[in-house]
Length: 494
Ligand code: HEM
Image 1 (cartoon, rainbow, N blue to C red):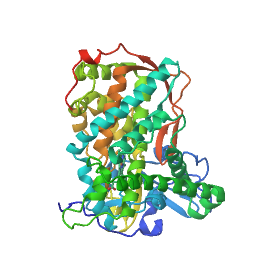
Image 2 (cartoon, helix red, strand yellow):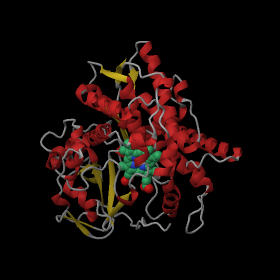
Image 3 (cartoon, rainbow, N blue to C red):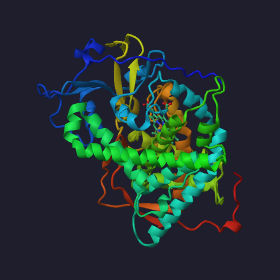
Image 4 (cartoon, rainbow, N blue to C red):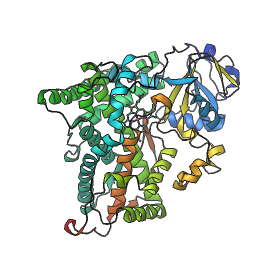
């Protein structure tokens, strides 16, 4: 298969003034401090939400500066649609992603467009996300979901609220590890998160701190201790992945055509080339990180909104009961039929796109939105929470949680490129269908089994570690009337 996704290479323009000849047309926060930049009133622990706040005051395109380092942000729908034009723009590995390069090097997510391993890995791995492959992962997804409900039943019996982000992270890590690499981290059997998760959270937070500030200053503020911790986390992540790969190679047995099999065994259909062992290591780490953190956040936000809106939860539950009926284990085909549950998920990803920004670089000298000249190599960050709240598209109450915004007719009535939680173009998320299938299945299973009770004192607080998560979200559970016993019920074909 010759890929049609060939992405052109382009070097970034070093200075924002050279990159954007009419920088004066792009507003910045009013109280700019000489030498320091836009530092007054900023929240360094939540840079994304800080940027969203600024953007809602400054308009569809704006810039922010720390010391000599200045970035251009775009949140308006028309400008994002223009940046989505693949003939003039492409993905840019912005500092936030570049900070993960020591970990993931030229793995799919962090690769520069011109690195040959991107195309090779993309072509080798894309079939791992086909419909057929997805149907093959369904059984493992159900098994992991069973472990979650087993754990939640225990918490419920003990009268304890459940730790939503913690448990969703266990679920999604186990799912990608099982389906992708035949590996079991035993997350639900542990009182504390698996050390891999601690190291990953530690490394993502460290990378975020390093990107919130320009290089030398980040080093100074973070200190040697933070660097040492970063190195320790990196080593643990590498060791864990090496163990997963070593076990498969030593075992000598294929893993049911999972992602690791594809990486180790599949040659490129045109060139016959294979991924090197070092690149396989980078891809495994990429999939373990990219494949669980974002889905875990998406599920957590959806559960938060379902708990706050009993009428929406009731409608979703009615759909699950109607579509799945008495079936104990829903089959692969029955997941995509949960249209309303899927809308709940989409609406959660609209308000809180868990990978909240991506960068686009100009492939040629061009004019953004007919107004802002950009040199070839100029780049901007698309801020998804702003795009997803643009009142010109989403109406006067963009903060209101309303899954009906994703009814087919409403979607058709909106312009293209206004909902981008999975990125855009050739470098958009390869795991989109995987995430949507997993999350819809799990939401369906949880809605069918439990009623969710929000804790009255909880106010949504969103933590940032490159991805977003509802911090400290706990929910009370009530068990719904039990489903029929397995021998009375029909088990769906898979
Ligand atoms: C709700 C869940 C998810 C969200 C919101 C999400 C979001 C994104 C976004 C926005 C990008 C583009 C980043 C950019 O342009 O710089 C991306 C790329 C990517 N995602 Fe996801 N993702 C999710 C789940 C997954 C899953 C489950 C996997 C793997 C099983 C995965 C693997 C990847 C990979 C490998 C890339 C890089 C693709 C490439 O450049 O070729 N993601 N994702």
